[in-house]
Image (cartoon, rainbow, N blue to C red; front, side, top):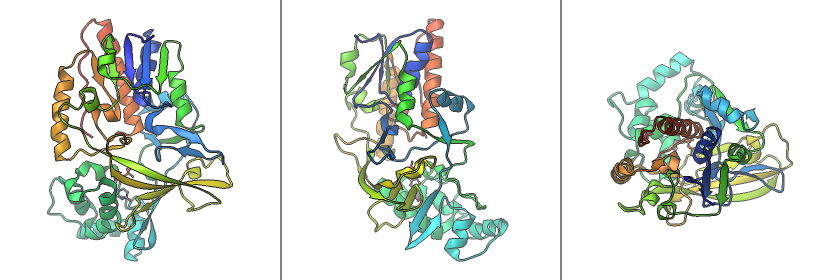
Length: 382
Ligand code: UDP
């Protein structure tokens, strides 16, 4: 049996919409091609006891109180402060770029004010509004730090020169003139005690929600649905009519070993001649646990081809042009709402995904109450 509201994708987007509808008395079917819920946030405990972020590191961080309260309803969130180190040119540095990184890199003992002046002298002030990743980096930190920490990593992660990438990607990372080395600025930062999958299972655990896993669906098969919430790839909904949107995918080489391998959860490798981008030691995502064994992921990035799991939307010029066509088609389509990372083809963090899913559900419920058609959801570029 398939309910008349169908939600494609059992990640945070789909689960949150299903739950909001269920709490308003509306039944839905949630369908996912994979054998588990939670999408790329899926976690699994290995035989050595370590909780593994199966599709790579996921740290929950937000400034949005509604989102924070929402996720806390469905599982215990443990305080967790993400700290990342970087290896560059045979040395280990603090990240994101902060006063410690600057003093380590230049062999200085600068104060915050001195460092700010020092970096301003190195930064390229001729750049007005930075268009590309490279311009953004040169404007904010100058050539030396850009080349040491961003150029090689970004080349490996995205497979193209940082001159061809949008500035917004770098805007994800702060630059600080203090010794604060928390990777994120948000006031709420946490990782679920039992992993993300039980949280998403708890969101979906409602008598008005039916979940089918391991099932791929096409829009044609859902033609009886009153409304579809589509959190799969937007181009897939339209059978790739305008061409395929590109993604980067990741390969993880998993190693099981003993002890503490790197002493931190994530070590980035910024040099272009090191083939991987970062090494993740998963037990450090759960500092409240203790394990003798350790599970390590060595992470490689490449262009996704057919059958690969899509991770990062590429959003270069070609993709932006294609996306415009898909967005126009989506705005004209009726009975369907596109949401989430794949449904809107954006680089989304979990908190934004949840926030937007809550907003989409609010909108759907008010349209229903007021008996007006659902307005197409237009995602802002990120
Ligand atoms: N980045 C970089 N050097 C680093 C870490 C990140 O150049 O050591 C750049 C890179 O382009 C990356 C982007 O900053 O794609 C965002 O980094 P973040 O750590 O947010 O990536 P995620 O964890 O989402 O893969």
